[in-house]
Image: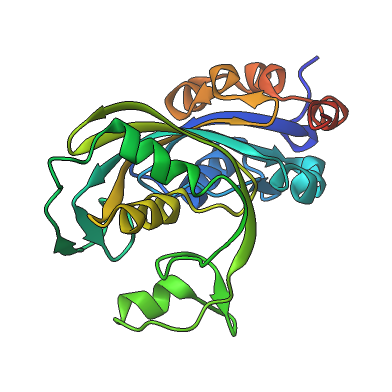
Length: 242
């Protein structure tokens, strides 16, 4: 007997496509399942792709636990450019020359400066709220407001490829880490500036993107099949253990 949709409960792993907000994905899932009680455990910017952990039904109660998990990313940065959003979706504010002497070793050394416990100032183009107003609303008006730096941990920040002006990288970090700001700050450390051009979340602790369903595939699934894609809450909690 097919279980009613209203009884669906668990964790759905979605491979988010570029160009959509995390809220857009949640909205698609809500409409497909005809359920209001849908959430997610960690926002991805529109530019980013990869693992988005969707919470269905009573599993929304697990949000604080799943939000707190460490994340893994792979991405691409471009040196020599600075944008207001710290990524390629923003307005380019400045271009700087890249010194011919800037080699792989110099970039790796700069990356090492950001490994460990630290405080990071959230970018103006972010959903962080100041006095109840998201920062991005101030940013769209050209305003810059004071932001409280937040504690984060960067466990790994590795250069995978380098061919000027582009570099591919891997990051293992704590919750609340803005990878585009990490790239921006690294660019400032190098003196030439830098911005994030691509980003893909590959894991949230033991939850992996290779186990995720694409949004297109999800939307084509029969309701009975969707239930089989959900990770039950207790199993999801077990995956959060180190």
